[in-house]
Each structure stands twice: as C-alpha cells, then as structure tokens.
Length: 460
Image (tube, rainbow, N blue to C red; front, side):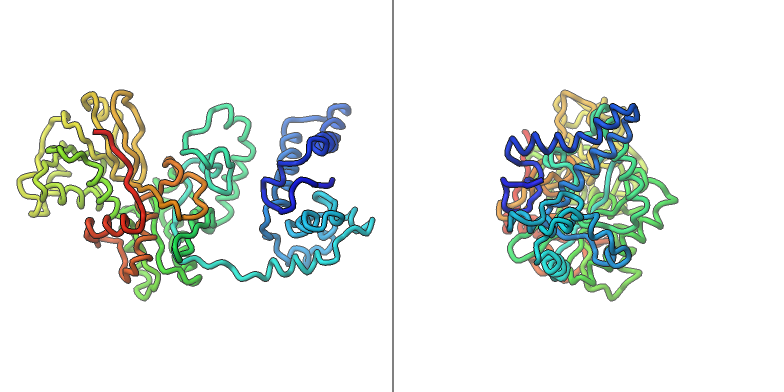
C-alpha cells in the first residue's frame, strides 16, 4: 500500500490518505474479516483482536519515534522480514518509491524495493542521545480507564477533562482495558507519558502504573513506595533537578508527604517537592475577599493546616464540626480565637478535602462554593452549588506540547504540585519541600505569577 498524501511520519499520516487509497486500504484489510464471515468462523474477540492489531501497527509505523530495540532482531533475525519499524516506513514517506509494505517488509525484500539506507537510519535513530529532563512530575493512574486520558492514550479523551467513560464504551473497550490492567500489573516501573518544554527547562510527566484503589490498600503501600523511590532515583540519575509528587504520591499516610525518601537517601541531590505551599496559596487566593467565615471539612492534611493558620492570622474564622480535628488544629497556638468548633453548616465557603461525604454536602446551603484543598476532587452531589477545581493554575502560552488534559482539569491547566516543581526549578531553590516543611505561601504565589502562571477564576 502506497501512502501518497503525507511526506512525514506523524501519527496523523496513519489516518489521512487520498479517497481512492482509503477505499483500497479498507478493502484489503477487510479480506480476512470477510473470509471468517464466509467460512462461519467469525467471532467478536477475533475481529476485535485483528482490528486492534491493524490499527496499532498502522499508528506505530507513523509515530516518528523509533522504540523497537535492536536486541529483538538479534534474538530472532527472521523478525526483520515480518515486522516493520517506524524508521522503515519513514523511508517510504521521504523516498516514495521504496519500502511499500505495511507491517510485513518481506515483500519489499522479495521485489527489491527496500531503501538501501533503511538499516542505517534505524541504527542512527536508536543511537540518538536520550532527552534528559530537568523537572519530572510523578503522577499515577486514577481509574481503570484513566490510561486512555493520557497523551499516549486516545486523543479524543486526552484532549478533554477526565469523566468516567460511558457504560457502552467500557463494554466495547473491555478487552483493551483488561489488557492495560494486566500490563500495569506486570510492568513494575514508572513510564513517561508526556514531554514539555518551558523557557530553558525540559519537563516530563511520569506515571506510576497503579490506581487510586491500590493507593487505598494498606497491603499495597510498600510496593507503591518502592515504585516511587525507584522513579526518584532514576530521575536523579538522568540529571533532573526537581521531582514533584502528584496526586496520592505525596500522601501523608503513604510516605509522610515525601519525607520517607529523604530519610532513606539523605544525600539525595534531586529536590522533592509536594507543592503544598502553592496548593495552600491557590486555595487562599480562591476565597472571595469579602469572606469572614469558612468551614473546613474532609480529612486534615498539611495543606489544610497551612490554610487554617493563614486564614486565622487574617482574622477570618475557620469553622470545624469535628472535635478531634479541632483539638489537632488547636495545638498550634497561633490560630488564636479564630478557630471555632461549631455544629453549623451555614457557611457559604467550604474548604474540602478527602473524605467529604455526600451526607455532609447535602447540609450545605444553596449557592455554597466548595473549594478543594486536596489533589483529588470531591464527588459532585449538589446541582445548586459550585465546585471549584482542585488546586491548579493556567499554564503560560509559551509552555510547549501541553495538548492533553491533566486528569479532570481543563486543557492548559496544571495541578499545583506540577506547577510548584517547575517554579522550584526556575527559581533555583536548593531545598526540599516535603514532610513538614512549608514555604512562604505568598513568596511561592508571587514566583508562579512572575513566571506566567495564572489563577483560575471563582464566582463571587
């Protein structure tokens, strides 16, 4: 099959062809399916597997990234004639009259149409120096279908904020979903999901192949900590200056807000950032200026304590309805009399974290603004209230390759932890921000603004 439309191997080239070529392409690809129909051996699983294979191989040939290692051909030399590579097909897009075969190069070798530079281009591509990151943001999968929302997943999903997939999509895609779950269980290492550039920094997002439900399991904590620790050491080996911990990778019960890794490796050169100071600053800036009272709900955290202290020092009352939480916060004498234990839920501003129940949300008055201080959003129960985004900022336009959404955030909106890691590197702060350490929230906020990050808006 000859691809005449595009002269470069980009993923789009796998989908865009002249109309006549499209007809011929689909006719040829339909032959095995029609053969199964005619012979009465067709099955949904076989058809799905065949179509998935064709689509994967087609996209792989146009991805413009050579990732098939040379040792595979050393172990099994005949594979050279049975499996094409991105560089093999790239010669067809540049030389046109060579490397015609899709998927199986054997026919090009038989008819003498193999480009003579194919092997050299392949070896040169593999020998390219790896792009080393300056800043790594370490996140993790959330739900079983969240892998489709990564930049390396499905573009139609990755380019929109995460929402649970419709039931019919889950039914259709269950084979791929099950396969991805098996792969995340087998592949025990963090993987690169996104590469960006900002000013002089090279940024990467790495994903720990574990789900929210696994982070909630006590029996999985040791394994998850080992994965995070491995990623930190790998990032340091690659020369990264800062690693920010996203979502539950910075959970207090998991690793003491990242302090565990500093204790294990006191000579660690890479700086660990949990982004708590910036998250607190974002929440403080999101509270309407005329506010005199807020209610603090959900599980207490380092961020929540920082916010409560800042508000009390400004003369704003912080209400809590849980006596244990009140006593825990009261240990800090700087909160003074502005920390109040009450049974009232009438406050219009709710600062919420993990563990906020649906029952509690129903007690809120109409028009209440829920502002999360945790990296995970609460489940939306009320239609007559407003739910602000989790702590995040709008990225500068000069930040490159930011085409996919970060979980439930809008496009070009980045989580507080991710922004904090970038700002940390740009400012050259040679300290960790993890464990009990908290930066000056105003200083971090001003630094983020100076580098072009912008706040999200909150209705008043």
